[in-house]
Picture 1: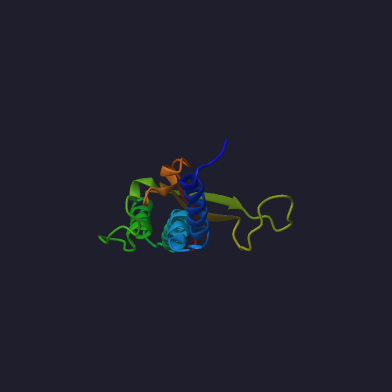
Picture 2 (picture 1 turned 30 degrees about the vertical axis):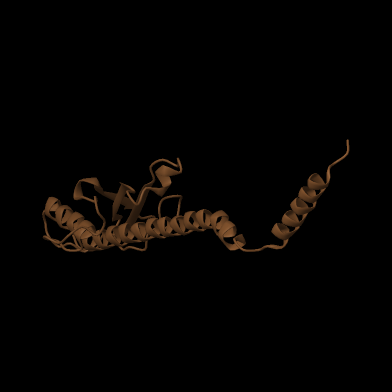
Amino acid sequence: MKLSFTGKAMLIKLRHTIQRLRRDESGTALVEMTLVAPLMLLLSAGVFEFSNIIYTRLLLEAGVEDGARYMARCNDSDWATCETYGKNLAVNGAIRDGSPRVQGWTTGIVTVTKKSFLTDPNNNGAQLYLSSTGAVDVVQVSTSLAYTGIGLWSYLGFGTINITASHQERVFGW
């Protein structure tokens, strides 16, 4: 099959156009940006979400530590009053009123337990506490909160994250 003169000219013109497009670099930045931008946005959102989870956990830990320290030194003879004040201090940062440290955290999901341990001066397998008494009381304040952030975790299919915090203190106040 022979090409006519106009066919050869069109083929040569097509080759020149293709070579010119190969050398043309305009638009490459746009193509690269469209490939990289979604990944960078996802990475940035992930870093933000992860740091928010850590911040929430730190607030919960600070709260239960404050509550446990208060309960360990509470001089009120009524355990229920100490427990109420300790829970309020953990959640709100104050024994009365205040606003929650973390959105959705309430005193209802804070648990307080008090345990007595026997001291064993001979260290015969019992829990050893340095004490002049036969028993030591320990109070534990703990909580678990379902994380509600910007929703990136659920969007990616990871499900709900429960953040837990717990702290123990030896009781001195009663």
